[in-house]
Image 1 (spheres, helix red, strand yellow):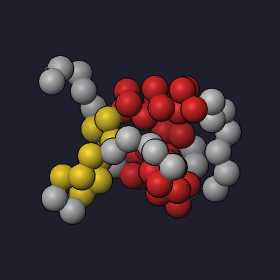
Image 2 (tube, rainbow, N blue to C red):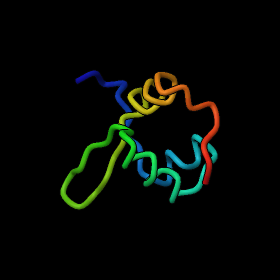
Image 3 (tube, helix red, strand yellow):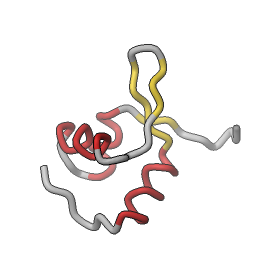
Image 4 (tube, helix red, strand yellow):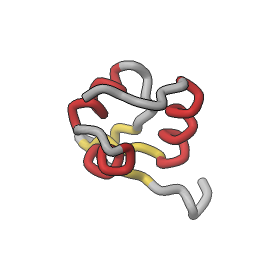
Length: 62
């Protein structure tokens, strides 16, 4: 794993995408890639960006 990999919390991703936390949980159900470490959910920043671009989600509701 590269040293530049950045793992984000739900709050980090919601801030990055400028959407609510609920929207992030809904996107997770629709396939937004995440890791579960114990009870914690983390997102690889690059995977989130790639997923958003690949799904064509320019705007999300939430």
